Image (cartoon, rainbow, N blue to C red; front, side, top):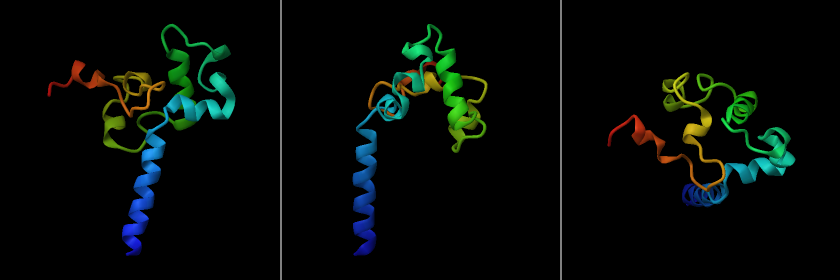
Amino acid sequence: MLKVLGLTVLLSFSGAVLATSVADSHTEMAGCESCHQDGAPSSDMAYENETCISCHGSMKELEGDAHKQHDGVITCSDCHVVHEASPASGSCTSCHQP
């Protein structure tokens, strides 16, 4: 019974986390400046991707095979759509065929 209750609470919490975007959770820290230089997006997203790495570590340091396999191949913003409530973009199909 306790396992079921614990799982229910965990799943409820995970749904709440996915209901907000990465940007929403990061702006609570320091506004838009937590990711964007002077609060405005850069034209090439280089500053933003470096900001991700400075807080979270490089892709080879992150958990999960997907990060390690793509280290040096793509950037954080290639997959993570930070202003939408979704875990990753559909950019995978540009290299991987379903």
